[in-house]
Each structure stands twice: as C-alpha cells, then as structure tokens.
Length: 99
Image (cartoon, rainbow, N blue to C red):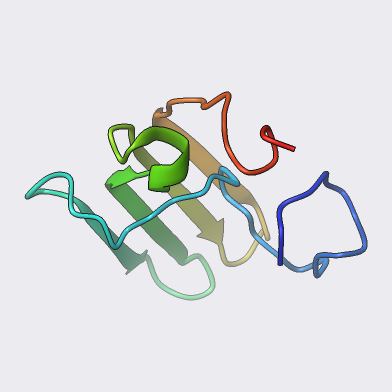
C-alpha cells in the first residue's frame, strides 16, 4: 500500500493511523528507543496505550536522524481515540514529496 490523501476508499474505515508517518523501528538510533503497549484500568473502562519512543523516520527521508515520540490511546467504553504528539518532526521530503 502506498501513501496517499485521506480520506480515501483505499484504506479500511476501521484503521487507526496515528501520525501517518514513515516510521522505521528497525534502525536503532537510541539505546532507549522502544515501542510498547499497556492496558490500564478495568472493564468496561480500559485504555489501550501504544507508545512510540524515539522511533526514527525511514532513512530515505531523513537519514534516520529525526526521532519521533508519540502515543495512541484507545478508550474501551467510549470509542474515543487520542493521538498524542510528544516529539514530532515534520518532514518536507519523502516518497510522496518526490513525485
């Protein structure tokens, strides 16, 4: 699947896209880099928290020098989805920008 404008019929309607960045967790840029999840609370008020800490962007766009830290929080009973940008570095180059 290639990136494109959203909304579009190319993506499933039940998709959580977070920051929609080209992350590359395979490249270690920091000894503290991690992706983890937690489930907190008790049913029916649990929260699923997916955390990205110091995860670099794909090297074609920025030579793995830009790290991003953010969280996605899913709330069980309300259906609310939060995307929290903690350290976010917008990139003006990439696959789409080069076309």
